Length: 93
Image (cartoon, rainbow, N blue to C red; front, side, top):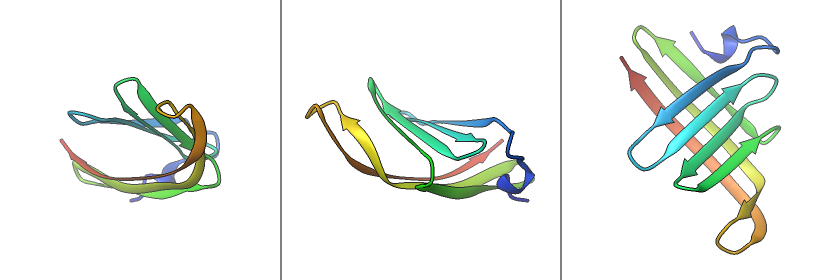
C-alpha cells in the first residue's frame, strides 16, 4: 500500500526522520513539502517541484521524495539560489 494513495487533498500528515546529524520533515497535504535541517541551517521545499511516495508494508515504511529547482536562501553567502533535495528512507519498528 502506498501512503500517498491513502491521503485525501485535505489530509495533513507529517513524517519526521531523525538521524545523528540531520533532521528531515516530510509533509503531505495539498502538496508535498520537505524540510531538511542541520544545526541552525534549514532548507524548505514545497510545491510543484516536489514529488515522491512512501510505501507501508508490515512494520516498515520506505519512500523516496525529491524537490528540484527550489529557490532557497543561503545563510553562508546571504544570497538566493537553487537547490535540489532528494530523500530516500526506510524505517522499521
